[in-house]
Amino acid sequence: MIADRKPGFNTLAIHAGAQPDPATGARATPIYQTTSFVFDDVEHAAALFNLETFGNIYTRITNPTQAVLEERVAALEGGTAGLAVASGHASQMLVFHTLLEPGDEFVSARQLYGGSINQFTHSFKKCGWTVRFADTTDADSFRAALTPKTKAIFVESIANPGGIITDIAAVAAVAKEAGVPLIVDNTLATPYLIRPIEHGADIIVHSLTKFLGGHGNSIGGAIVDCGTFDWLKSGRYPTLSAPTASYHGITFAETFGNFAFAIACRVLSLRDLGPAISPFNAFLILTGIETLPLRMQRHCDNALAVATWLSRHPKVAWVNYAGLADNKYHALAKRYCPQGAGAVFTFGLKGGYEAGIALVSNVKLFSHLANIGDTRSLIIHPASTTHRQLTDEQRMRAGAGDEVVRLSIGLEDVDDIIADLDQALAAA
Amino acid sequence: MNHDVYSDAYIRDILTNHRTIAMVGASPNTSRPSYFAMKYLKAKGFCVIPVNPGQAGKEILGEKVYASLADIVEKVDIVDIFRGSEAAVAITREAIRIAAHVVWMQIGVRNDEAARLAEAAGLQVVMNRCPKIEYGRLSGELSWAGVNSRRLSSKRPLLGVKGVQHRVLASGRD
Ligand SMILES: Cc1ncc(COP(=O)(O)O)c(C=O)c1O
Image 1 (cartoon, rainbow over the protein chains, first blue to last red):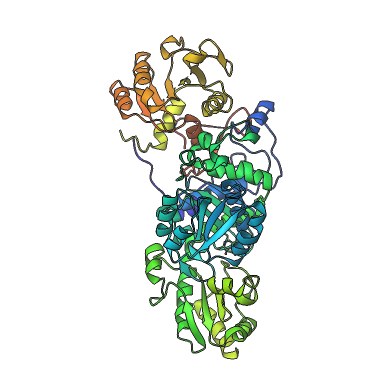
Image 2 (tube, each protein chain N blue to C red):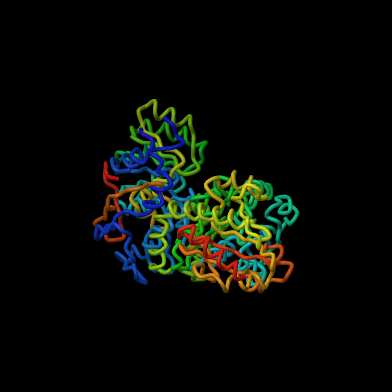
């Protein structure tokens, strides 16, 4: 018996999940732009609705274009299964909807994308879920925030916007002790830089909108089931470990084993809450992923050059990029993402709020907008935009003070990127 | 043989070279995993014979239930063990006695002693796997559910004759 060869990351980025189309032989993944799929016969229809067989019914739940994207992301992360949804936020909603009951709590890093802080603090409250925040740079703070009601721990691998690298293994140890799954938002790192599963993550979420899609053209999200959490043994997650009323009493963890979480997210939470990804977006994101390794390396190389240049600029007070040797998180970056510390980072302007506003107004190549992970270089002043709904204290703690500017470094010639910042800073 | 990993070719050969599966521990309860597996494998053209002493003489999915492997009249190729790991040695001894070709233990079922016995008698062994999942994984059907098949192929998946949402395995084809 010859063991199967394990394909490398570049190969997976291009091939995982995608065979030629069985009907036409099309080699690129077709866009199955259809709402629904005919059943082979009445029995086939019944078997599909009972989850007794695999197949497509309706694009809110599965779609063949989406399926290729799901398997691709799962393969790159090394998980057992994936689920693609309408946005990064939708992926978070579905993960917590599958894990939590009203009255439950979870502990989250407070260094998060501002939108996630809003989602957790305000919208989740309406579901009866309570978030307790901890400090992503201090694993003990997660332990201190645990209560008997804690059902999950959530961190970002590289935190947005602060450029902080989370010690995933240290937080994973706290999650293991507590007997709860660790959820890692791996959006800023992508599996090219960090594979959280190798450090103890149980569930991974992505905003595919960013580097995975990579071209700033499609919103999407993904959930990856790492297959590592034993739902039956825990018994604290009834959606997974108790008979499910809406599927004739099947128990997901029994029937679907180590990919039960991904299936439950799909056939319960996605089915009922509805944030499906469009097949067209799935196609565009898939195409983006094919070049992820090449793009991500260039993003990181450009980001390091720009951060180095900024750190020597007289108008710049500080640069927080973990790729810089004197950065607080450099040791963690070398351990978790030796190929690069990502392409999103912040820096502080000596001129404060006013200088931040002036800089974003003066750039000519950078685009002033609220996104990251585009081929294009992007700039934003978080205090006046993404983080403006937060309290001052929340903003400071999220790394979004008045003087802070966030960059997402693109794939242009690095000299042109630097020249644009140079002229804009001169005018600021 | 190393029973922690199986090559895709090993599993595919077992599933394409055999047709009759005796399922020990088959359940008439329609929400049990064994019921799901039996229904799926029947749809893929396998002849699945349920074995369950508590159900002997009754029918599951239209198939007569036997009390033991020894009672089965047909020639059994694969003995699929849907029982606890501790039951595997006794079932494997019976599988050897009826000259089955393969002892297959379900996900969560592993018994190295049973595997040694079976292999010494010339049987092939699969442990801690589900034939339904393996069939779906290798045919590409499981990929429709976003499952990581850990398999790359530049060949078209094979469509079954039953319908477009029906993929099949063929011997020697990825
Ligand atoms: C780290 C992180 N997580 C989640 C999200 C939310 O993703 P989406 O905008 O696709 O809903 C974002 C978006 O900026 C993000 O940066």
